[in-house]
Every structure is written in C-alpha cells, then in structure tokens.
Figure (cartoon, rainbow, N blue to C red):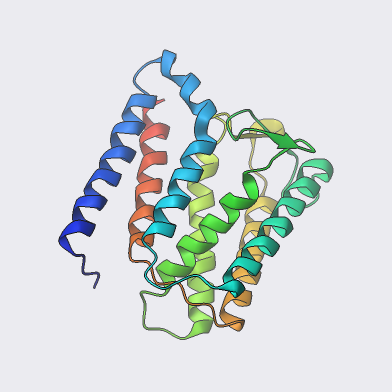
Length: 213
C-alpha cells in the first residue's frame, strides 16, 4: 500500500488537476489544438516532477546510464525513422519539438522517463527481479498501446497507412525488457511513490483526449 504525507497528497492533487483540466482544455475546441505543438514541454514537466520526488539520491552511475540510455534510444529512433525496420514505417509531427535526422531530440528523454516510471512502479511489488522486469516491460507496452491511439491526434507521430504495425509493439516490449534487465543487473534503486500516480494520470490524460476528439 502506498502511504503519502500531507504535502505529498497536496502536490499530487495539483498534479492531477493539471493533467485532467489540461486534457479538457486541449480538447475544448479546435482553437486549442495548437497547444499540442508544445507537447515536448509536458515531457520535460513530467520528468522534472518525478526527479523532484525521488526518495533516494542520484549518483554517478545513474548519470552515466542516463547519458548512455539517451544516446541509445535516440539512435534507435533515428534508425527507426530512416529504415522502417525497427518499429515500422512512421514519421514524426511537430509536437515533440526540434529534430535531428527527422527525429525529435526529446524522444530519448521520453524513453528514459517511461523506463523510470515503470521501473519505480514495479518496485512497489514484493516479487522477484525477474518478474519485476516482466511487469515493467508490460507496463511500458500497455502505455504505448494507449499512446498510439492519440499520437496522430496530438501530431506526435504518424504511421504509414494509418495503422500501427505489430512490429512496433514487439520492438517496444523487447527494448523494455532489455532496459529493465540492465537496470536490475546493475542493481539500480529508484524509490518514487509518485511514479505510479504519474503513470496512471498520463493514461487518463490520453484517454480523455481520445474520447473527446
């Protein structure tokens, strides 16, 4: 069970208010669709929130893996966009900001953010590391399944033929498995009770957008 202090409950209330009212605002009328162009700010905001409320301290190992993971996932996305062999044939819209090689520079951070969330989420369960790896990977896969429904609506990315290929979900799951395995293998510790709330708030945010557009 998750126990929150009073200040944490107040903070969580305002974060939830931000997500829910933001979703309704963005879908209130067509004039507000232009705000989807600033989605990369939401990624930065989310990452800042979880970093602030991490219980344990960061160290050099965390920083090293942060850099390596960012470079790895950015490279994977560049290959994905250029070849269509990793996730399928897709291209990015304008909402994720500045691009290099037709790939938003923020996308590597978004991968790290999702790995962080699902890793911290799985830490709440008293199960073996093997099952935590599997659980974290399925949490990432479920998140992507929901996100794919709203990605074109938010001008995040678009699939050839407007259909998400099975290869995308397969690759997401494999990459999630590898990432969670590496973090467990190197004995990373992430203690952040806000992670589970941010995870579900994001799902709710996307569902509101999906059903209101």
